[in-house]
Image (cartoon, rainbow, N blue to C red):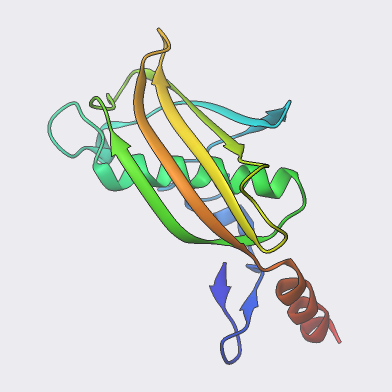
Length: 153
């Protein structure tokens, strides 16, 4: 989500170029998520240009994977929100050039109408958790839709 006129938040004109999930962003992660039973799921194999230390994904990329998984949960539910807080726990190195799974889900009990809590994790093919994320998102659906309608008129 980007900043629009003043402090209003507007839906991106071209989400196909989103760094996390945009299919037209050649430098991006190009993640493709499915959603079932409250769980957003994606599989990926990170290329070498996302390297931190040799053979290991950069921590910023790991954080992005977790943030994207949480955001996808909201998008599948029709909620347009922005990340307000993201906490990441790095448990084991996330490898490059190996299949990993990214998962995200919403904490229904903790969430309210405007503040939404989510969690995400990255695991290897054996199911070992490599990184965990906890996020707090602010629902901006009304602002985004309202802004979009104003731009369209």
